[in-house]
Amino acid sequence: MKNYTITVNGNVYDVVVEEGASTGAATVAAPKAAPKAAPKAAPKASAGAGSVKVEAGAAGKVFKIEANVGQAVKKGDAVVIIEAMKMEIPVVAPQDGTVASIDCAVGDAVEAGACLATLN
Image 1 (spheres, rainbow, N blue to C red):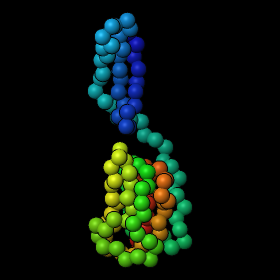
Image 2 (spheres, rainbow, N blue to C red):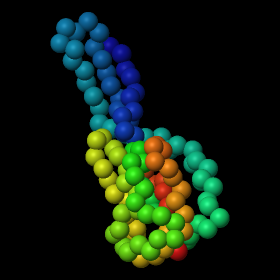
Image 3 (tube, helix red, strand yellow):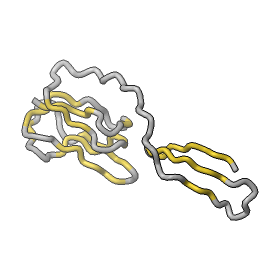
Image 4 (cartoon, rainbow, N blue to C red):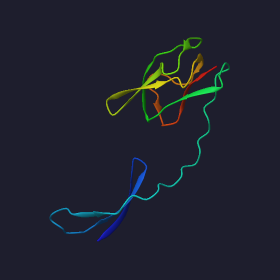
């Protein structure tokens, strides 16, 4: 038997694989906490960056930018659309405000929690 540690979508699994088994059977232990990644440097903010962050709720690729700098938005309005697993996911304004900066471009790969735009 061989033991492997596999990480899938941030979940860490201990896997035991039995050699020579014709059924391809494997035993999988319950997931354990993933190791903490070192914090990444924050992206440089635009000169007109606002105080309210509009953050990605999931990892994906920026599909479309719905708002422009200077545009007034209401709470719940889509600011950016990200594509993940063939789904389009709107990233919405957390409150009413004016778009101060757009900190991503169409085609950018983004992580969950990444700041995509700011509002004033």
